[in-house]
Length: 290
Image (cartoon, rainbow, N blue to C red; front, side, top):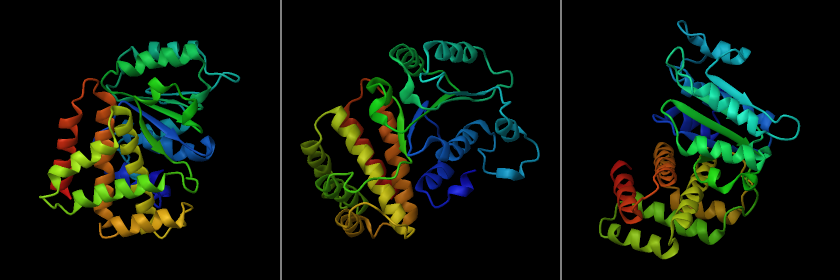
């Protein structure tokens, strides 16, 4: 359950989430090792208490049914042999085309999502592109580069993967940490220039999407440093993050992470998005809540 992962910044995010997106991609080191926390996340979507009562629920046995593999509104797909086949995705779509008998949210989990063949991946893409209310997808992979780019671009990426040294370019860390720091300090005379500086580095939708993902990674490192956890990123990267973001308290780092996840999901989900207005709203909202 989520309480078992309270030293992980994802736990902090999941406990504070108030809105779920239609598709998530978890990148992990080991699928079996990470599956309990991902299943716990699925329970937060399926449980009317959002899994906050943990094992103390008295009027709901959903989590017990999920653990026993009998909950009809949760479907878990694994490779059939070495591949996830188109027929498995079609069966999923058929099952989820029927309304839940209990009017529940419904969740599907695809383990080893990188094992989809082209037919199954394209079939899933159509399912993700036209999400129905109350249906949420969770894909799990050890290598996001093996996921069809059009699927990847429509998912909120959550990395539970141990980061390698220098996984983020040091100049990127400097630029994005300073950007977040300037928003936090609410120097009003600087706000009109923040968007201009940002667009000078990130010119198109793909680059902006990558920048938002890297801000998530930077905040993940910053939160781990707050917990004094060993961090295998380079000391130079850690020093930059401490220097630029060290005066932002933990709760505000978590809030900032949530807002960045929210806006990155919007960037993914809204096709004809005005990037100028998008960044205006992002900067204003962040400066107001921090």
